[in-house]
Length: 265
Ligand SMILES: [Zn+2]
Image 1 (cartoon, rainbow, N blue to C red):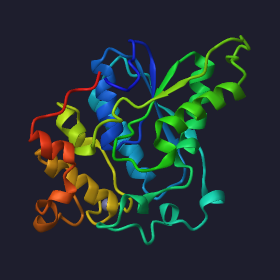
Image 2: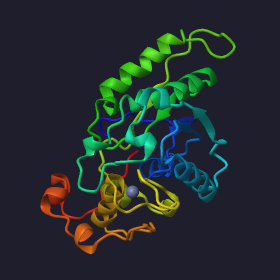
Image 3: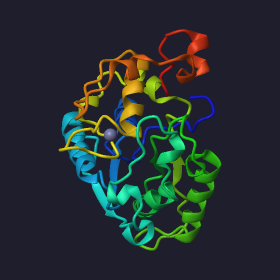
């Protein structure tokens, strides 16, 4: 894949949130012949119970002998985020708000540090993120992730769990980084998307249908031309999903018509 790390077949760590992006990446990595070590990082955020159920169902649906048992880390953030909406579930950014509204301070480094060290200790050389092209946040960009991966590698001094020196740092890779969310849905094939979860304000275990993340999900399915398998507590308004005006459609798609993107390698 142009401009992205070319992954030779070998074990890859994967931050698995239970959302669409990491679910598609899980299936993609398996299709590429990799063994996958999934990680979930529990931070105490308002939607994590539903996310963790999604991760369990997703892994059960994939049923691959090349997926190692899930490793879950705790990274509690109450002491850092305080009364932030991500912890309280109140005043969650609604549909119509910009992507920047769902920014969580230092989200990626907080998620990455324990899986990075774990991978380093066990000789796993790559840790994959389902970051997409549309991610606007600085801590999801390649330059940051390269430097962060190297910094953690330096912090652990190149020693594995047995104290053997000389292991290189774990490379953080983003195999989906040139794609938008609707493009990866076009690439998703038979990925069990019905088991994914991506809502900031779950309602009775369901996607709320009204938050920023639900709107992003609905729009992606609509743009991808795929039926949305999600059950929403508040069903999407036909006008909102159907009204995907030109400014919602990435220029690359508009200029190339509706052909599916080239699958990542
Ligand atoms: Zn929602």
